[in-house]
Amino acid sequence: MINKQNLFIFLSFFITSQTLLAENVKYYPHTFMWGAAFSAHQADGAFGGGENGDWYEFEHSLINGVSPIQHGNTADRATDHWHRYSEDYEWAQKLGLNSLRTSLAWEKIEPSFGVFSEDVIQHYRGQFQNMIARGIKPMIALHHFTHPKWFHEKGGWLNPESPKWFLEYASFVVKHLGDLCDLWITFNEPMILVVMGYLKAEIPPLMKSIDASYEASFNMARAHRMVAYHIHQVQGDSPNGRGSDGTLRGVSFVNSLQIYDPLNPNNPNDVRAAKWVTKINNWDFLRGVETGILKFDLLPELMLGKSFERAMPQEDLPPWAQKGPFMDWIGVNYYNRWFIKYNFFNLLKVEWLVPDGIKGDNGYALYPEGLEQVLRQTHTEFPKYPLIVSENGLADGEDSRRPDFIKNHLLFLDKALFGNAQNLPLDILGYYHWSLMDNFEWLHGYLYRFGLLEIQYDNDLKRVPRPSYFVYLKEIQKRKE
Image (cartoon, rainbow, N blue to C red; front, side):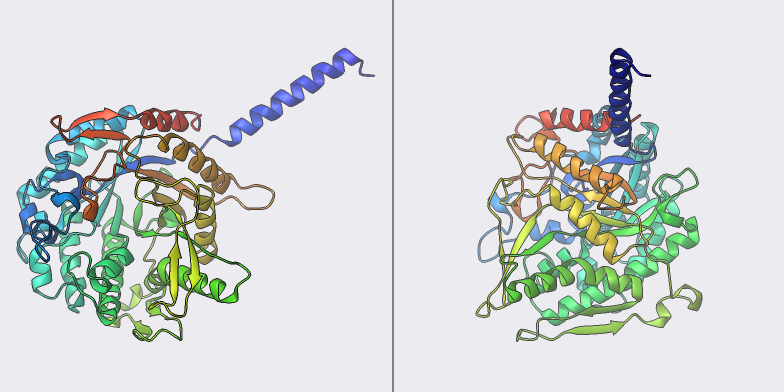
C-alpha cells in the first residue's frame, strides 16, 4: 500500500524523470553540423583576381547611367575575408560551430579558359587548413552566382559545352582540396541564377528570354550530374549522406525552397497557382537532376512562352552511371513565406504577395513554422535523401528580430528532427545560419545586414558580435549533450 508521502515521492520522481526525458529528446546527435554560411564574392573582396569575374565587371558598369548596385557599392573590399579569414574562423570557433559553409571564386581559380592559378588554390588550402585546425568542417560550394568573364564570352550556360568546362574546373578543385574537404555543393540556388540572369536580366549575364532560361537550367543540371559523378569516383559514395564517422559528407546542390500558400485557400485558381509556383520554383530542377529529365510546365493560359522537357545526353556519363546517385542529401535554403494570388490580367497570371506580420529589413515575411513545413514538403517529394538547412537568416541591421528569429526557427527544427504523434522524425544532418558576418548582398550592396557578426565598414571592417551571436551560441549549447 502506498501512503500519501510515498505517493508524493513517486509522483515527484515520475514528473522529474519525464521532464528529463523531454529535455533529453532535445539533444541533437553529436554528428549534427551546427554552422554558419557566407560566400566568396560576398565576403572575400576582389583580392586574388576578382577583376576576372562577371560580377566585378557588372558592379563597375553603368546601366542607363546608373550603377546596378544600390548606392553604387562594389565588392572590391567586401569584408576582406580573403586576408582576415583566421579572425573570422576564430569567431566561428567561439560560437561553438563545427562546420562552415563557404564557396570558391571560379573567376580567381580559372581566370582564363583552361588556365588555373596555383597561387589561388594554395590560398584556399591555407583557409581550409586553418578552419580544420579549429575543429570546423568545411562545406565548399563550387559555384555561388559568379563566373569568369571568359565563360560568358564563350556563351555561358547556353553553350552545350559549358557542363564540360565546369567539370574541368571542379576536377582541378577536388584534386587540390579533396584531402581537406569531403562535403561539396555544386551550385547555390541554381534557379535564382537562372531567373534573375537569364529570364529577368537583373544580374549577369543580363538576358531576358524564357528559352535561354530553359537552356541554362538544362546545362546546369547536366553540369551538376557530371560533377557529382566525378566526386563520387574520387571520394567514394556517401550512403545516406554520411561518412564512416557518421558526419555529413558527399555532394549535392542547395535550393531556395520557400513556402507558397494560396491567398484564398477556398479559391481553386489561387490553389492551382500556388501549386504551380511551388512546383516550378521548388521541385522541378531537383526532379530533373534526380531523374535525368528536366521538365518545366507553364500554366496553360500563359502566352509568354512554352513548356520544356528534355532528357540529359547519354554521352555525359558512362552507361553504369546513368542512374546516379546524383545527390547525397538535399540542401534547403529557407527564408520566408509568400501568398500566391491568381490574376488572369497579370503577365504571369500570378501575384506574389507578402503576408502581414513581422518582416526583415528587406521586406521578407518571417514565418518560423515554415521551416518545418518546407522540410516536411521536401521529404515528401524526395523521401530517400537526408536534409540539411543550408541557409536560414534575415536582414536585421538593428538585431532586434534576429534573436527571436533564431530561437523560433530552431524550435521548428526541433519539431522536424524529433517528430511527434502526428509527424515522423526527419533525417536532418545540419543547420547553417546565414550568415556568419555581414556581407555584400548582391544588388543591394551593403544595405542589408544578415550577420551574427556586425562588420563596421567605417571602422577598418571591425568584427563585433551582435546579441544574436550569443543567442545562437546558447541555443546550440542547450541542444548538445
